[in-house]
Length: 256
Image 1 (cartoon, rainbow, N blue to C red):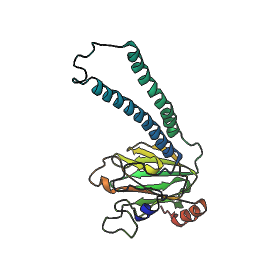
Image 2 (image 1 turned 90 degrees about the horizontal axis):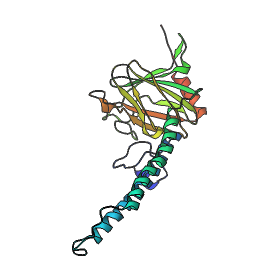
Image 3 (image 1 turned 90 degrees about the vertical axis):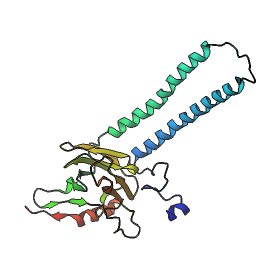
Image 4 (image 1 turned 135 degrees about the vertical axis):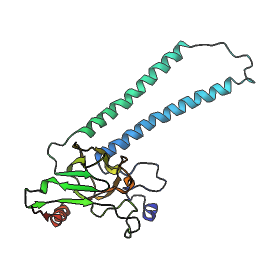
């Protein structure tokens, strides 16, 4: 918080106290969500200004002291046509970019650089790097537990840090396969614009492309039981040259 207060250019990749806006975008998908929000908010401001002006003008000119005998006007053809056409045009300007963003979010990368399978449990997560799994020799699979709130290290966020982060290469297309081993969970990382439900017996997938190095925090977004608030998600994006060494150090020989 101190660093961000004096250096506003520091990215916001985790929730902050009294935060009102979005976290800084780390993927093109999240940047599109933020841009669409700003575009819609522009139309909302125009509507607010117009309706407020009409309301204030009506209160001012039709006050009983200024107009003891009001005019008996019950309708106006022109104003009724305008108030029917304009509200129908505004949703069209909102729908076109929103549909484009929606379809781009559902787009599946045909040949991703990395495929990661996230399995939700009560109340931890298991990650499997499918590209590095062999039949009987090596496997890159690990569990990720939250760090207790009374045992964080200096600089770690309370109830947001885990013992094993998900390490991914920056500026690469990633495929995330999400499922659950028990109840409904959700794999959500706000900075990446991803919120994918984990359903038992079903595989859901989403694609992301992290554009900058950093550490991104998320949490489960489905009520999954008593410790629902204690299942954070931490994604660490590193340069490609560092990613290879990080993965090779985590490869664990798997015995039958």
